Length: 233
Image (tube, rainbow, N blue to C red; front, side, top):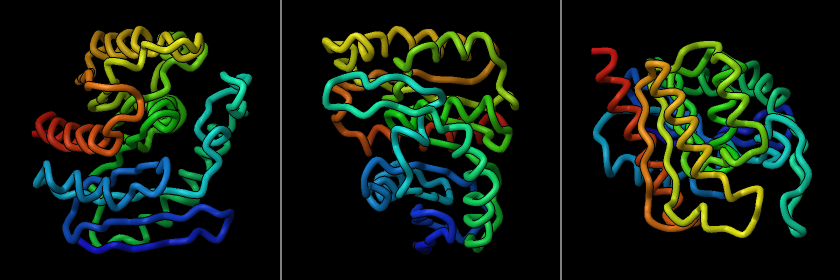
């Protein structure tokens, strides 16, 4: 595999690509910090399946990853402004084609994987675009107000082949009233997908929201790669 750095001509977003040398799934990941290289290494250590990994950085976290506007959830937080729809247009029309042109081998299918708010965005994207065959929401912000109801009252534009959820077992133990329903909501959304005939899994990890973030995400990628292969065989 080869590492490629790409800077988009529009905006400040950067893309770090780990390109396979054979036809492989393309995993889209929005970086929380600078964990791209670590995520690639940890994923390669737990699966021998080929994959392209595109790590996107430089976006506005509280704007681009949020489906609709909500006030700030704590005094030291920033309000979410609900710019996911606009960012999805950029992702589909500009970023994804740029990634595709940078690869050396074809893409078997696209999957989107995210942590925290990016995990929320990964699930939301299924309702706004049909380019993703699978998704993983790792410690996703599925506490987001009205999101569980949104999932239950809307249909994905494309029925995903498989969807993965994970959460830390201590994430629900918070005094923040916004964050507290995260486990109930994640369980409910997981069951909704399972009852819709979509192959899915919900893994409870030890610890809070900030424990082993990269390892949890690597496990989500591994699950998608291996379970989507089984579905298509």
